[in-house]
Image (cartoon, rainbow, N blue to C red):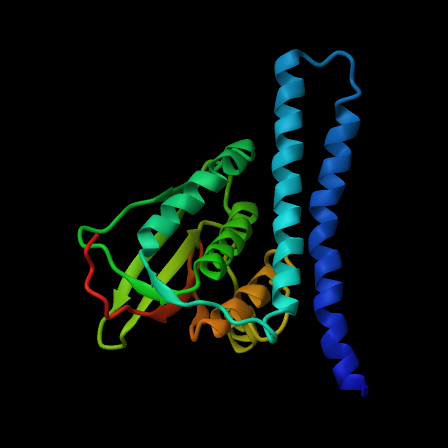
Length: 236
């Protein structure tokens, strides 16, 4: 193994350690807070709920890392999927976690539903990754929006997650765009992020013949995955 290969292997491991540190530290802090005998029953229940939700987020990350390591050896079934239904499932799954952090996650459907070709599990994991990232970098009291749109003339459908967080400078944005999905890439305006979730999402998208990307806004960013539209008649 040469130095470059060793570096390529270590980079995701270092990013994983960085990404798992925050939820583990929070779980420890919440568990210690539970020892306060002056807490009311409602406060104790709120802390227990937050411990469970934070633990689930860490478990999702470890599950994604395991699946990423097996991408080379696995065959993933691609099928027509309604991305709006997938977005609603993600909103339902993450709603309690967002509420625990004083934020909301929403999705507004289209008048004419679309179908894309993807692996259901991998697409779900991508949207969960994007939403987790948005959760921690949105301003308190704001809502994170899941979006679906058809890209005319390209035969692709874009599913994105829009957050309202710190703006990125042009230089930072250029660096992020160059390496997005190719390697864990820290987002310097968002210091808790190692970029691991974006890297994992890029690997999952590539396995489905798709790509990930991002759009910069003055008040945040939209991270998205683009996948081929289905030719199957939409009977939904």
